[in-house]
Length: 419
Image 1 (cartoon, rainbow, N blue to C red):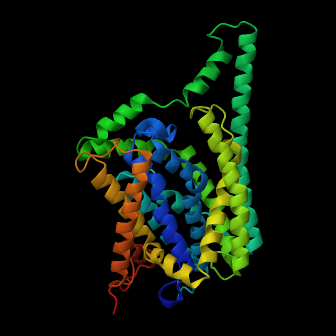
Image 2 (cartoon, helix red, strand yellow; image 1 turned 30 degrees about the vertical axis):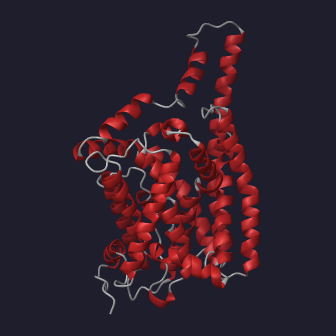
Image 3 (cartoon, rainbow, N blue to C red; image 1 turned 135 degrees about the vertical axis):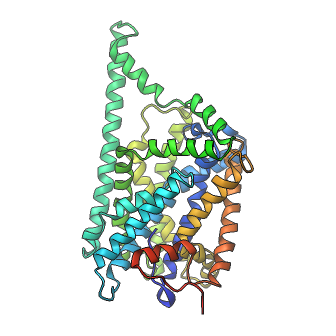
């Protein structure tokens, strides 16, 4: 998750941005936690009244990928702070890698035992293993590497689009020449189309497993975690995270993420980011709607990283510009506490949703909430965890999981209770 400095030297802007991101990411995670798998490809599955459509469009234009992007940028900023901090005789390398290994362990526990296969801690820990050699690079080089990584991801997506177009063209040519339905070119295109259809059997299995007891819920979630955490999946998501982390490290070295630049720069960054990102997100979303949510060759494979990055930078610019006004600071400081306790808050979101609200051994809401209702639940969780973190930090120096993470990192038990 990354961290800012402790005590009086903490960078408040980073805490606030992290708090917004860690609470905001629940607006997306709540879908996978509380509904059937098919909702990822067709949001109409659980209801599609006006409020659901409004929430879905807001998510597509402003939230999709941006909270994760913001967390990745902040992880990069935290990496710069940690790598430059005096180590009191300890090896900076050993401290850093102990921290990343501990994060990987947290991620494995979170994904496999606490029933959240969509965990990002494991991804961040793995991506973080590759960050340390870049710690002394100047801001421009870090930003260049980050953009280069995103260009690689975009190139992979472009190659997938070209492959899909070729598959479709070969099938259309075969049909034009009167080929039979069992022609391999036609079958290849049909397989391609079948892959984007919602899996109704998987949806039914999800409903059945989640409505049962703890053992069934745990077995179901572990199966998904094993599937999602295969080598190709881990490699792709780690590259995605690493690119944004490098970019975040560079932006922090320029002073952008720390909130120290003039307000007009942040406003210009927000305006430019939204001017680029929102239209791209709009085009991607309109293609989804026009195709009835079944897009064989989505334009997002090529444009997603561009739109996500631009909108993420815009969010950061808007928040940092707002923080330079008295009213803005007063309003946004609410998010500093969950930002300081980002790891505890993130795990807390899972405990509330996966262990209390949705499984059959508790409230059993899985599969029964619409898109709009899911955001109301996510906002309620945000209020609860913000109140908890504020109350906690009035009594303790750091969150409970932050305390454990620091202990595992430095090998010494840190002070916990405020004097």
